[in-house]
Image (cartoon, rainbow, N blue to C red; front, side):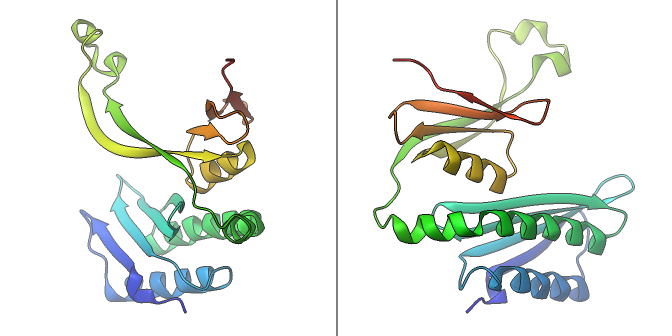
Length: 192
């Protein structure tokens, strides 16, 4: 049974009312209960740009499955509806793979621990003197999953990422998938 108490709705420098919170929780429960019996948590964050509202949805379905989406619109309800439609589309597309993956392979996924860094772009700040000593903006721990290429594509699309770093289950080598400017997906598989 999906419980709306696991869903948090908040605003970043904007106030989120009871009506919007109730609408978001009910809509997200309706979206999720069609495909899953339970989920770990859901976080919805509303923020205000200059003229538009922005909605970011992060859903933690299973220990290794995260779904992310975001959208902007001139009102908060519209921004949520667009982001929720993206979630529905991804769930429809990957539901069979998600459920088959979870129940077919009962052994847990293998992970490698890694550090993730966000580095300030020197071209944006005209910081020529810091080219060899970049400023680290954020640092966090991350895991590198051992998955197949098709599963990595699925995870990249579910998380709405432009790239994913993973260990290939067949070759046992570290690989990178990335979204190319032409819309296709590039795959870097180093040789031995």
